[in-house]
Image 1 (cartoon, rainbow, N blue to C red):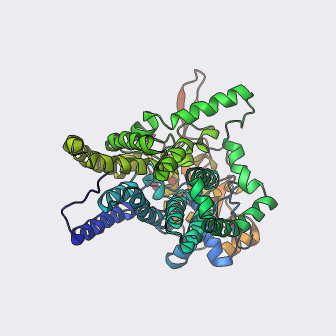
Image 2 (image 1 turned 30 degrees about the horizontal axis):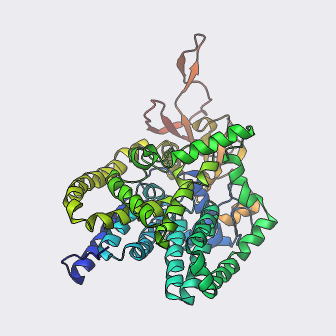
Image 3 (image 1 turned 180 degrees about the vertical axis):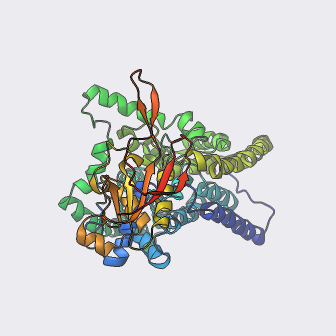
Length: 538
Protein backbone atom coordinates (compact mmCIF):
# COMPACT_ATOMS: atom_id res chain seq x y z
CA UNK A 1 0.00 0.00 0.00
CA UNK A 2 1.51 3.31 -1.09
CA UNK A 3 2.09 6.05 1.41
CA UNK A 4 -0.37 8.90 1.16
CA UNK A 5 0.67 12.54 1.53
CA UNK A 6 -1.16 15.83 1.27
CA UNK A 7 0.09 18.99 -0.49
CA UNK A 8 0.48 20.91 2.74
CA UNK A 9 3.49 21.76 4.81
CA UNK A 10 4.32 21.47 8.45
CA UNK A 11 2.80 24.88 9.18
CA UNK A 12 -0.56 23.78 7.87
CA UNK A 13 -0.38 20.66 10.02
CA UNK A 14 0.61 22.70 13.07
CA UNK A 15 -2.31 25.05 12.41
CA UNK A 16 -4.70 22.10 12.24
CA UNK A 17 -3.29 20.70 15.47
CA UNK A 18 -3.84 24.07 17.15
CA UNK A 19 -7.35 24.41 15.73
CA UNK A 20 -8.28 20.87 16.80
CA UNK A 21 -6.93 21.56 20.28
CA UNK A 22 -8.88 24.81 20.60
CA UNK A 23 -12.14 23.21 19.46
CA UNK A 24 -11.66 20.21 21.71
CA UNK A 25 -10.71 22.37 24.69
CA UNK A 26 -13.71 24.64 24.20
CA UNK A 27 -16.14 21.73 23.97
CA UNK A 28 -14.73 20.09 27.08
CA UNK A 29 -14.47 23.11 29.34
CA UNK A 30 -17.41 25.27 28.21
CA UNK A 31 -19.89 25.63 31.11
CA UNK A 32 -18.27 22.64 32.80
CA UNK A 33 -19.89 23.40 36.14
CA UNK A 34 -23.36 23.86 34.64
CA UNK A 35 -23.68 21.13 32.00
CA UNK A 36 -24.76 18.63 33.07
CA UNK A 37 -26.83 20.45 35.66
CA UNK A 38 -27.02 19.07 39.18
CA UNK A 39 -24.52 16.56 40.52
CA UNK A 40 -24.47 12.79 40.53
CA UNK A 41 -23.89 11.15 43.92
CA UNK A 42 -20.73 9.54 42.52
CA UNK A 43 -19.41 13.00 41.68
CA UNK A 44 -20.14 14.48 45.09
CA UNK A 45 -18.59 11.39 46.66
CA UNK A 46 -15.36 11.89 44.71
CA UNK A 47 -15.44 15.61 45.50
CA UNK A 48 -15.88 15.26 49.24
CA UNK A 49 -13.32 12.49 49.61
CA UNK A 50 -10.84 14.64 47.68
CA UNK A 51 -11.71 17.49 50.04
CA UNK A 52 -10.99 15.19 52.99
CA UNK A 53 -7.61 14.28 51.49
CA UNK A 54 -6.64 17.94 51.16
CA UNK A 55 -7.76 18.87 54.69
CA UNK A 56 -7.09 15.76 56.76
CA UNK A 57 -5.14 13.26 54.65
CA UNK A 58 -7.94 10.69 54.99
CA UNK A 59 -11.10 9.62 53.22
CA UNK A 60 -14.56 10.34 54.68
CA UNK A 61 -14.25 7.25 56.91
CA UNK A 62 -10.92 8.30 58.42
CA UNK A 63 -8.72 5.90 56.44
CA UNK A 64 -5.32 7.52 55.93
CA UNK A 65 -4.46 7.96 52.22
CA UNK A 66 -6.42 4.86 51.19
CA UNK A 67 -5.85 2.97 47.97
CA UNK A 68 -9.60 2.53 47.54
CA UNK A 69 -12.20 5.01 48.74
CA UNK A 70 -15.09 3.16 50.39
CA UNK A 71 -17.44 6.17 50.03
CA UNK A 72 -21.03 4.92 50.41
CA UNK A 73 -20.04 1.34 49.62
CA UNK A 74 -19.23 1.73 45.94
CA UNK A 75 -15.44 1.74 46.48
CA UNK A 76 -14.14 4.52 44.24
CA UNK A 77 -10.81 3.83 42.57
CA UNK A 78 -7.88 6.06 43.57
CA UNK A 79 -6.88 8.01 40.46
CA UNK A 80 -9.76 10.48 40.20
CA UNK A 81 -10.09 11.38 43.92
CA UNK A 82 -6.36 11.97 44.27
CA UNK A 83 -6.13 14.02 41.07
CA UNK A 84 -9.19 16.08 42.04
CA UNK A 85 -7.53 16.93 45.36
CA UNK A 86 -5.08 19.54 43.94
CA UNK A 87 -7.93 21.23 42.05
CA UNK A 88 -10.00 21.45 45.23
CA UNK A 89 -6.96 22.64 47.16
CA UNK A 90 -6.45 25.49 44.68
CA UNK A 91 -10.01 26.42 43.75
CA UNK A 92 -12.22 25.10 46.54
CA UNK A 93 -14.86 22.40 46.50
CA UNK A 94 -16.61 23.50 43.30
CA UNK A 95 -18.33 21.44 40.62
CA UNK A 96 -16.17 22.62 37.74
CA UNK A 97 -13.00 21.92 39.72
CA UNK A 98 -14.09 18.33 40.39
CA UNK A 99 -15.04 17.76 36.74
CA UNK A 100 -11.93 19.38 35.27
CA UNK A 101 -9.54 16.38 35.58
CA UNK A 102 -11.81 14.01 33.61
CA UNK A 103 -12.17 16.55 30.78
CA UNK A 104 -8.42 17.09 30.71
CA UNK A 105 -7.83 13.33 30.63
CA UNK A 106 -10.06 12.99 27.58
CA UNK A 107 -7.92 15.52 25.73
CA UNK A 108 -4.73 13.75 26.85
CA UNK A 109 -6.20 10.41 25.78
CA UNK A 110 -6.83 11.96 22.36
CA UNK A 111 -3.16 12.94 22.22
CA UNK A 112 -2.09 9.40 23.12
CA UNK A 113 -4.48 8.08 20.48
CA UNK A 114 -2.73 10.18 17.82
CA UNK A 115 0.58 8.41 18.43
CA UNK A 116 -1.12 5.02 18.57
CA UNK A 117 -2.99 5.66 15.31
CA UNK A 118 0.24 6.78 13.65
CA UNK A 119 1.79 3.40 14.47
CA UNK A 120 -1.03 1.75 12.55
CA UNK A 121 -1.34 4.01 9.48
CA UNK A 122 1.92 6.04 9.30
CA UNK A 123 -0.01 9.10 8.17
CA UNK A 124 -0.07 12.17 10.42
CA UNK A 125 -3.12 13.74 8.76
CA UNK A 126 -5.34 10.70 9.19
CA UNK A 127 -3.95 10.17 12.70
CA UNK A 128 -4.81 13.77 13.61
CA UNK A 129 -8.33 13.38 12.23
CA UNK A 130 -8.74 10.17 14.21
CA UNK A 131 -7.43 11.79 17.39
CA UNK A 132 -9.84 14.71 16.97
CA UNK A 133 -12.81 12.37 16.50
CA UNK A 134 -11.68 10.32 19.50
CA UNK A 135 -11.46 13.44 21.67
CA UNK A 136 -15.11 14.36 20.95
CA UNK A 137 -16.54 10.84 20.63
CA UNK A 138 -20.11 10.39 21.98
CA UNK A 139 -18.96 7.22 23.73
CA UNK A 140 -16.67 9.22 26.00
CA UNK A 141 -17.66 12.89 25.86
CA UNK A 142 -20.65 12.94 28.27
CA UNK A 143 -18.74 11.07 30.97
CA UNK A 144 -15.63 13.20 30.44
CA UNK A 145 -17.63 16.23 31.61
CA UNK A 146 -18.46 14.56 34.93
CA UNK A 147 -16.55 13.03 37.82
CA UNK A 148 -18.43 9.73 37.62
CA UNK A 149 -15.65 7.16 37.97
CA UNK A 150 -12.19 7.01 36.45
CA UNK A 151 -13.28 5.86 33.00
CA UNK A 152 -11.43 8.56 31.07
CA UNK A 153 -8.09 8.25 32.92
CA UNK A 154 -8.39 4.53 32.20
CA UNK A 155 -8.60 5.29 28.46
CA UNK A 156 -5.46 7.38 28.65
CA UNK A 157 -3.68 4.45 30.30
CA UNK A 158 -4.89 1.95 27.68
CA UNK A 159 -4.12 4.17 24.66
CA UNK A 160 -0.67 5.10 25.99
CA UNK A 161 -0.05 1.51 27.08
CA UNK A 162 -0.80 0.17 23.59
CA UNK A 163 1.44 2.76 21.97
CA UNK A 164 4.43 2.28 24.28
CA UNK A 165 4.17 -1.51 24.24
CA UNK A 166 4.11 -1.74 20.44
CA UNK A 167 6.85 0.87 20.25
CA UNK A 168 8.98 -0.96 22.80
CA UNK A 169 8.78 -4.23 20.89
CA UNK A 170 9.35 -2.54 17.53
CA UNK A 171 12.26 -0.31 18.57
CA UNK A 172 13.74 -2.62 21.23
CA UNK A 173 13.28 0.23 23.70
CA UNK A 174 13.59 -0.53 27.41
CA UNK A 175 12.40 2.95 28.32
CA UNK A 176 9.22 2.50 26.29
CA UNK A 177 8.73 -0.92 27.90
CA UNK A 178 8.89 0.74 31.33
CA UNK A 179 6.47 3.47 30.20
CA UNK A 180 4.14 0.77 28.89
CA UNK A 181 4.21 -0.90 32.30
CA UNK A 182 3.38 2.41 33.96
CA UNK A 183 0.55 3.16 31.51
CA UNK A 184 -1.14 -0.22 31.83
CA UNK A 185 -0.83 -0.08 35.62
CA UNK A 186 -2.32 3.43 35.55
CA UNK A 187 -5.33 2.03 33.67
CA UNK A 188 -5.73 -0.68 36.31
CA UNK A 189 -5.75 1.88 39.12
CA UNK A 190 -8.07 4.27 37.30
CA UNK A 191 -11.25 2.22 37.27
CA UNK A 192 -12.34 -1.25 38.34
CA UNK A 193 -13.55 -1.88 34.79
CA UNK A 194 -10.00 -1.31 33.59
CA UNK A 195 -8.72 -4.38 35.38
CA UNK A 196 -10.43 -7.06 33.27
CA UNK A 197 -10.22 -4.83 30.17
CA UNK A 198 -6.45 -4.42 30.41
CA UNK A 199 -5.85 -8.06 31.28
CA UNK A 200 -7.78 -9.16 28.17
CA UNK A 201 -5.98 -6.62 25.96
CA UNK A 202 -2.58 -7.84 27.17
CA UNK A 203 -3.53 -11.44 26.43
CA UNK A 204 -4.49 -10.32 22.91
CA UNK A 205 -1.11 -8.59 22.62
CA UNK A 206 0.75 -11.78 23.56
CA UNK A 207 -1.31 -13.83 21.10
CA UNK A 208 -0.64 -11.31 18.33
CA UNK A 209 3.11 -10.87 18.80
CA UNK A 210 3.92 -14.37 20.11
CA UNK A 211 7.13 -15.06 18.13
CA UNK A 212 8.41 -11.49 18.37
CA UNK A 213 7.94 -11.59 22.15
CA UNK A 214 10.09 -14.71 22.33
CA UNK A 215 12.81 -13.06 20.23
CA UNK A 216 12.73 -9.87 22.28
CA UNK A 217 11.94 -11.43 25.60
CA UNK A 218 14.15 -9.03 27.56
CA UNK A 219 12.03 -6.08 26.42
CA UNK A 220 8.85 -7.90 27.37
CA UNK A 221 10.24 -8.97 30.74
CA UNK A 222 11.11 -5.32 31.44
CA UNK A 223 7.50 -4.38 30.72
CA UNK A 224 6.10 -7.18 32.89
CA UNK A 225 8.47 -6.38 35.76
CA UNK A 226 7.49 -2.69 35.80
CA UNK A 227 3.82 -3.55 35.41
CA UNK A 228 3.74 -6.10 38.24
CA UNK A 229 5.89 -3.95 40.54
CA UNK A 230 3.52 -1.00 40.17
CA UNK A 231 0.52 -3.26 40.77
CA UNK A 232 1.85 -4.68 44.05
CA UNK A 233 -0.07 -2.19 46.24
CA UNK A 234 -3.25 -3.02 44.32
CA UNK A 235 -2.69 -6.77 44.67
CA UNK A 236 -1.99 -6.50 48.40
CA UNK A 237 -5.02 -4.27 48.96
CA UNK A 238 -7.36 -6.59 47.07
CA UNK A 239 -6.08 -9.64 48.96
CA UNK A 240 -6.65 -7.81 52.25
CA UNK A 241 -10.10 -6.53 51.24
CA UNK A 242 -11.61 -8.50 48.32
CA UNK A 243 -14.83 -6.46 48.57
CA UNK A 244 -12.97 -3.48 47.13
CA UNK A 245 -12.68 -5.48 43.90
CA UNK A 246 -15.89 -7.52 43.93
CA UNK A 247 -18.43 -5.45 45.88
CA UNK A 248 -19.62 -3.33 42.99
CA UNK A 249 -19.52 -6.17 40.45
CA UNK A 250 -21.60 -8.55 42.58
CA UNK A 251 -24.42 -5.99 42.62
CA UNK A 252 -24.56 -5.57 38.83
CA UNK A 253 -23.53 -8.99 37.49
CA UNK A 254 -25.83 -11.11 35.31
CA UNK A 255 -26.12 -13.62 38.16
CA UNK A 256 -27.05 -11.06 40.84
CA UNK A 257 -30.49 -12.73 41.17
CA UNK A 258 -29.11 -16.29 41.13
CA UNK A 259 -30.44 -17.40 37.72
CA UNK A 260 -29.94 -20.91 36.43
CA UNK A 261 -26.86 -21.73 34.38
CA UNK A 262 -28.77 -21.71 31.09
CA UNK A 263 -30.42 -18.35 31.82
CA UNK A 264 -27.07 -16.82 32.80
CA UNK A 265 -25.47 -18.08 29.57
CA UNK A 266 -28.33 -16.70 27.47
CA UNK A 267 -27.99 -13.32 29.18
CA UNK A 268 -24.26 -13.26 28.50
CA UNK A 269 -24.62 -14.13 24.81
CA UNK A 270 -27.42 -11.58 24.32
CA UNK A 271 -25.36 -8.82 25.88
CA UNK A 272 -22.23 -9.75 23.96
CA UNK A 273 -24.04 -9.45 20.63
CA UNK A 274 -25.62 -6.12 21.62
CA UNK A 275 -22.20 -4.47 21.67
CA UNK A 276 -21.72 -5.19 17.96
CA UNK A 277 -25.21 -4.10 16.91
CA UNK A 278 -26.12 -0.86 15.10
CA UNK A 279 -28.43 0.19 17.95
CA UNK A 280 -25.48 0.50 20.31
CA UNK A 281 -22.76 1.57 17.88
CA UNK A 282 -24.57 4.05 15.64
CA UNK A 283 -28.14 4.79 16.75
CA UNK A 284 -28.79 5.32 20.48
CA UNK A 285 -25.64 4.21 22.30
CA UNK A 286 -25.42 3.68 26.06
CA UNK A 287 -28.70 2.92 27.84
CA UNK A 288 -27.65 4.98 30.89
CA UNK A 289 -28.74 8.60 30.48
CA UNK A 290 -25.91 9.83 32.69
CA UNK A 291 -23.45 8.41 30.15
CA UNK A 292 -25.14 9.25 26.86
CA UNK A 293 -27.49 11.70 25.17
CA UNK A 294 -29.20 8.67 23.57
CA UNK A 295 -29.64 10.68 20.36
CA UNK A 296 -26.47 9.18 18.90
CA UNK A 297 -24.66 5.90 18.93
CA UNK A 298 -21.39 5.58 20.80
CA UNK A 299 -19.76 6.22 17.41
CA UNK A 300 -20.66 8.89 14.88
CA UNK A 301 -22.70 7.57 11.97
CA UNK A 302 -20.30 9.07 9.41
CA UNK A 303 -17.67 6.61 10.68
CA UNK A 304 -19.64 3.60 9.43
CA UNK A 305 -18.09 3.26 5.92
CA UNK A 306 -14.60 3.60 7.39
CA UNK A 307 -15.35 1.01 10.08
CA UNK A 308 -16.50 -1.43 7.38
CA UNK A 309 -13.38 -0.78 5.28
CA UNK A 310 -11.16 -1.06 8.34
CA UNK A 311 -12.61 -4.43 9.34
CA UNK A 312 -12.19 -5.67 5.75
CA UNK A 313 -8.56 -4.55 5.71
CA UNK A 314 -7.81 -6.10 9.11
CA UNK A 315 -9.38 -9.41 8.10
CA UNK A 316 -7.48 -9.44 4.83
CA UNK A 317 -4.04 -8.85 6.35
CA UNK A 318 -4.35 -10.19 9.91
CA UNK A 319 -2.30 -13.32 9.25
CA UNK A 320 0.80 -11.34 8.28
CA UNK A 321 0.28 -8.06 10.14
CA UNK A 322 0.56 -8.13 13.94
CA UNK A 323 -1.16 -4.74 14.31
CA UNK A 324 -4.23 -5.94 12.44
CA UNK A 325 -4.23 -9.26 14.29
CA UNK A 326 -4.16 -7.44 17.62
CA UNK A 327 -6.94 -5.09 16.54
CA UNK A 328 -9.24 -7.93 15.52
CA UNK A 329 -8.63 -9.79 18.78
CA UNK A 330 -9.32 -6.77 21.01
CA UNK A 331 -12.43 -5.94 18.98
CA UNK A 332 -13.80 -9.44 19.47
CA UNK A 333 -13.07 -9.38 23.20
CA UNK A 334 -13.74 -5.75 24.14
CA UNK A 335 -17.25 -6.40 25.60
CA UNK A 336 -16.12 -9.31 27.82
CA UNK A 337 -16.51 -7.23 31.00
CA UNK A 338 -19.75 -5.53 29.91
CA UNK A 339 -21.46 -8.75 28.85
CA UNK A 340 -21.26 -9.99 32.45
CA UNK A 341 -23.30 -7.05 33.78
CA UNK A 342 -27.08 -7.10 34.06
CA UNK A 343 -27.54 -3.80 32.21
CA UNK A 344 -28.08 -3.67 28.46
CA UNK A 345 -25.84 -1.55 26.21
CA UNK A 346 -23.66 -0.56 29.15
CA UNK A 347 -21.16 1.61 27.27
CA UNK A 348 -19.09 2.62 30.28
CA UNK A 349 -18.31 -1.03 31.08
CA UNK A 350 -16.77 -1.53 27.63
CA UNK A 351 -15.31 1.93 27.07
CA UNK A 352 -12.01 0.34 26.11
CA UNK A 353 -13.75 -0.44 22.82
CA UNK A 354 -13.80 3.25 21.92
CA UNK A 355 -10.06 3.08 21.23
CA UNK A 356 -10.31 0.00 19.05
CA UNK A 357 -13.36 1.06 17.01
CA UNK A 358 -11.84 4.44 16.19
CA UNK A 359 -8.59 2.68 15.25
CA UNK A 360 -10.57 0.49 12.86
CA UNK A 361 -12.15 3.63 11.35
CA UNK A 362 -8.69 5.18 10.98
CA UNK A 363 -7.51 2.08 9.12
CA UNK A 364 -10.57 2.31 6.90
CA UNK A 365 -9.90 5.98 6.15
CA UNK A 366 -6.32 5.11 5.22
CA UNK A 367 -7.58 2.38 2.91
CA UNK A 368 -10.16 4.65 1.21
CA UNK A 369 -7.62 7.43 0.61
CA UNK A 370 -5.25 4.95 -1.01
CA UNK A 371 -7.95 3.98 -3.53
CA UNK A 372 -8.27 6.90 -5.94
CA UNK A 373 -11.22 5.25 -7.64
CA UNK A 374 -13.40 5.44 -4.52
CA UNK A 375 -11.86 8.45 -2.78
CA UNK A 376 -14.31 11.14 -3.92
CA UNK A 377 -17.33 8.83 -3.79
CA UNK A 378 -16.71 8.18 -0.09
CA UNK A 379 -15.20 11.44 1.13
CA UNK A 380 -17.73 13.91 -0.26
CA UNK A 381 -20.67 12.24 1.57
CA UNK A 382 -18.38 11.79 4.58
CA UNK A 383 -17.54 15.49 4.79
CA UNK A 384 -21.19 16.47 4.35
CA UNK A 385 -22.43 14.01 6.97
CA UNK A 386 -19.65 14.82 9.44
CA UNK A 387 -20.28 18.54 8.95
CA UNK A 388 -23.91 17.97 9.88
CA UNK A 389 -23.58 15.26 12.53
CA UNK A 390 -20.81 16.66 14.75
CA UNK A 391 -22.28 20.17 15.23
CA UNK A 392 -25.74 18.62 15.61
CA UNK A 393 -24.52 16.36 18.40
CA UNK A 394 -23.02 19.21 20.39
CA UNK A 395 -25.95 21.56 19.84
CA UNK A 396 -28.14 18.80 21.26
CA UNK A 397 -25.74 18.17 24.16
CA UNK A 398 -25.58 21.79 25.28
CA UNK A 399 -29.30 22.47 24.77
CA UNK A 400 -31.73 19.53 24.85
CA UNK A 401 -29.54 17.15 26.85
CA UNK A 402 -28.81 19.95 29.29
CA UNK A 403 -32.51 19.96 30.20
CA UNK A 404 -33.44 16.32 29.64
CA UNK A 405 -30.57 15.00 31.81
CA UNK A 406 -31.56 17.06 34.86
CA UNK A 407 -33.43 14.17 36.47
CA UNK A 408 -30.53 11.72 36.34
CA UNK A 409 -28.23 14.27 38.01
CA UNK A 410 -30.89 15.27 40.60
CA UNK A 411 -30.55 18.83 39.31
CA UNK A 412 -33.84 20.17 40.66
CA UNK A 413 -33.18 18.93 44.21
CA UNK A 414 -29.50 19.95 44.11
CA UNK A 415 -30.35 23.47 42.96
CA UNK A 416 -33.13 23.82 45.56
CA UNK A 417 -30.82 22.74 48.41
CA UNK A 418 -28.07 25.02 47.12
CA UNK A 419 -30.55 27.91 46.96
CA UNK A 420 -31.76 27.18 50.50
CA UNK A 421 -28.19 27.09 51.80
CA UNK A 422 -27.57 30.53 50.31
CA UNK A 423 -30.61 31.85 52.21
CA UNK A 424 -29.19 30.51 55.48
CA UNK A 425 -27.43 32.97 57.78
CA UNK A 426 -24.31 32.07 59.81
CA UNK A 427 -25.19 29.84 62.74
CA UNK A 428 -28.58 28.83 61.32
CA UNK A 429 -29.81 25.34 60.46
CA UNK A 430 -31.13 24.10 57.15
CA UNK A 431 -34.09 21.77 57.67
CA UNK A 432 -34.87 19.60 54.66
CA UNK A 433 -38.15 17.73 54.38
CA UNK A 434 -37.70 14.03 53.67
CA UNK A 435 -40.41 14.38 51.02
CA UNK A 436 -37.97 16.40 48.92
CA UNK A 437 -36.36 13.01 48.25
CA UNK A 438 -37.83 9.51 48.05
CA UNK A 439 -38.99 9.33 51.68
CA UNK A 440 -39.18 5.54 51.78
CA UNK A 441 -35.47 5.37 50.87
CA UNK A 442 -34.19 8.25 53.00
CA UNK A 443 -32.62 7.24 56.32
CA UNK A 444 -31.30 9.44 59.17
CA UNK A 445 -28.32 11.54 58.15
CA UNK A 446 -29.45 11.53 54.50
CA UNK A 447 -28.15 7.98 54.14
CA UNK A 448 -27.51 5.78 52.25
CA UNK A 449 -26.20 7.98 49.39
CA UNK A 450 -27.53 11.53 49.28
CA UNK A 451 -25.48 12.55 52.32
CA UNK A 452 -22.54 12.97 49.93
CA UNK A 453 -24.44 15.69 48.06
CA UNK A 454 -25.23 17.43 51.37
CA UNK A 455 -21.58 17.24 52.43
CA UNK A 456 -20.54 18.75 49.11
CA UNK A 457 -23.20 21.48 48.93
CA UNK A 458 -22.88 22.53 52.57
CA UNK A 459 -19.07 22.30 52.36
CA UNK A 460 -18.97 20.55 55.72
CA UNK A 461 -15.44 20.70 57.09
CA UNK A 462 -13.85 17.24 57.03
CA UNK A 463 -12.39 17.69 60.51
CA UNK A 464 -15.89 18.07 61.93
CA UNK A 465 -17.42 15.25 59.91
CA UNK A 466 -14.58 12.85 60.73
CA UNK A 467 -14.88 13.60 64.44
CA UNK A 468 -18.66 13.32 64.64
CA UNK A 469 -19.22 10.65 61.97
CA UNK A 470 -22.32 12.50 60.77
CA UNK A 471 -23.44 15.72 59.14
CA UNK A 472 -23.74 18.21 62.02
CA UNK A 473 -27.52 18.42 62.63
CA UNK A 474 -27.11 22.04 63.70
CA UNK A 475 -25.95 22.74 60.12
CA UNK A 476 -28.24 20.52 58.01
CA UNK A 477 -30.82 17.97 59.13
CA UNK A 478 -33.98 16.21 58.03
CA UNK A 479 -37.11 18.05 59.13
CA UNK A 480 -39.14 16.03 61.66
CA UNK A 481 -41.52 18.77 62.80
CA UNK A 482 -39.25 19.95 65.60
CA UNK A 483 -37.35 23.24 65.41
CA UNK A 484 -34.23 23.29 67.56
CA UNK A 485 -32.87 26.63 66.34
CA UNK A 486 -33.74 29.28 63.79
CA UNK A 487 -32.99 28.59 60.18
CA UNK A 488 -34.35 27.69 56.76
CA UNK A 489 -36.90 25.03 55.82
CA UNK A 490 -36.93 23.43 52.37
CA UNK A 491 -40.08 21.50 51.49
CA UNK A 492 -42.56 20.74 48.72
CA UNK A 493 -45.77 22.74 48.44
CA UNK A 494 -47.81 19.55 47.97
CA UNK A 495 -47.72 15.83 47.41
CA UNK A 496 -49.76 13.80 44.99
CA UNK A 497 -51.66 11.04 46.80
CA UNK A 498 -54.19 8.45 45.64
CA UNK A 499 -57.84 9.01 46.54
CA UNK A 500 -60.50 6.32 46.98
CA UNK A 501 -60.78 5.94 43.22
CA UNK A 502 -57.00 5.59 42.96
CA UNK A 503 -56.68 8.96 41.23
CA UNK A 504 -53.83 11.33 42.04
CA UNK A 505 -54.98 14.36 44.01
CA UNK A 506 -52.87 17.12 45.61
CA UNK A 507 -52.31 17.03 49.37
CA UNK A 508 -51.09 20.39 50.67
CA UNK A 509 -51.43 19.51 54.33
CA UNK A 510 -49.16 16.49 54.27
CA UNK A 511 -46.61 18.14 56.56
CA UNK A 512 -46.88 20.70 59.36
CA UNK A 513 -45.38 24.10 58.60
CA UNK A 514 -43.94 25.81 61.71
CA UNK A 515 -45.82 28.79 63.09
CA UNK A 516 -44.67 32.21 61.96
CA UNK A 517 -42.78 30.66 59.07
CA UNK A 518 -42.10 33.22 56.35
CA UNK A 519 -42.12 32.07 52.73
CA UNK A 520 -38.97 33.39 51.06
CA UNK A 521 -39.12 31.72 47.70
CA UNK A 522 -40.97 29.27 45.50
CA UNK A 523 -39.01 27.22 42.99
CA UNK A 524 -41.20 25.83 40.19
CA UNK A 525 -40.59 22.41 38.68
CA UNK A 526 -41.87 20.80 35.45
CA UNK A 527 -44.05 18.42 37.50
CA UNK A 528 -46.07 21.30 38.95
CA UNK A 529 -44.96 20.42 42.48
CA UNK A 530 -42.93 23.39 43.67
CA UNK A 531 -40.16 23.74 46.20
CA UNK A 532 -40.76 26.22 49.02
CA UNK A 533 -38.07 27.92 51.07
CA UNK A 534 -39.18 29.28 54.46
CA UNK A 535 -37.43 31.21 57.18
CA UNK A 536 -38.44 29.68 60.49
CA UNK A 537 -37.89 30.61 64.12
CA UNK A 538 -37.50 28.50 67.21
